[in-house]
Image 1 (spheres, rainbow, N blue to C red):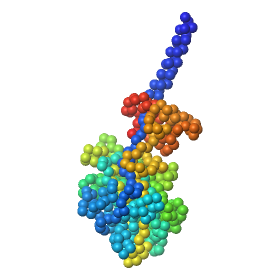
Image 2 (image 1 turned 90 degrees about the horizontal axis):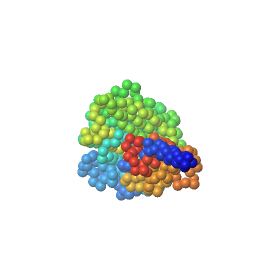
Image 3 (image 1 turned 180 degrees about the vertical axis):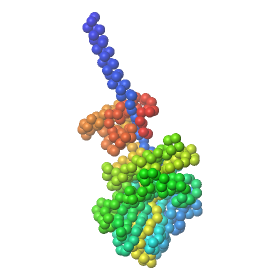
Image 4 (image 1 turned 60 degrees about the horizontal axis):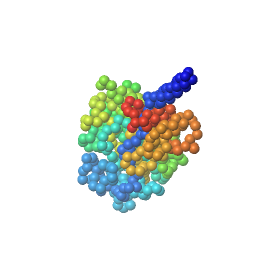
Length: 430
């Protein structure tokens, strides 16, 4: 009888131990994350396109917006001799002229009159709602025969690469500055000067634009001091065409992460995020988490949504003067594989169509989330060899709480989700 009771006690103890471990797993947890790709375009599905005239199409659509490329709703195409006659180009078009794998979006810059911003060339897309946090990824290729005016005579040249911004959703979408409809804005330029060489120059513009367009209210200058944001690979203009630099005639890759600062008791906090990477580097070229994008005002956009980013401009105005305008000198830079997401975009992400799945909890990529996924995630977190398993390797696999790492906590979250338990408050980052 005593042996029977002892055996029963041991079985009960075993069950309690198993349940304790089991409950420990249940306390934490998360799910596979379906990251919403809210915009993407590799231009391969677009018809060959150029503007109907050398002007602009504002948003909401006007008479110039006929035949806009799918997914884009505004453009500017302005220049000194901007047209498609006599061998010249409109300052923007879409075709396969500069892309070996398909089509691309091309910007043609024109040699400006000295001291003028002679061209403005961009495509714009406006998102359906505001987003407090976005990731942007794109490829860029620059004419291998590119000439900066600063290499030939005293000059300061610039071309805009992109702008990610908040548009007030009323008035002209292209109206900037203190009387305009845009703010905050993140601007990324390329600059070349006969005085200080070639640089990548990000610039910040803040909100409200009427009072803080140049971010002057930031007490620590973290938001508006552009000199702190300059990335100078070298002061020598000649390095622009070196291998690995933007002027080498190859495709290069940029990835950006922007997050709006938060508001507490009517105070906008210095906790906005800006970080970006070049050519799939693991360490960001800049990582800042103390930006005041917005200094005052409502934390909604006036339409019932959180205040945030809602518009992307690819391209912008240019001021480059290598040769006199009468030479009608043109050069180009092209864009491809543009992606905007609510979550980090894997470097190996390939554009499919519309909403896309970024692998997180379904670590064996078999379209189901179960205990096997939890066990594989736990195994991976222990540093064990995964080559004999069905582990699907990517930058986000197993990271189900979006903290940029996959560990035992993620394994517990996947187990909890696989059991159909409520994921509220667990860190689930869908």
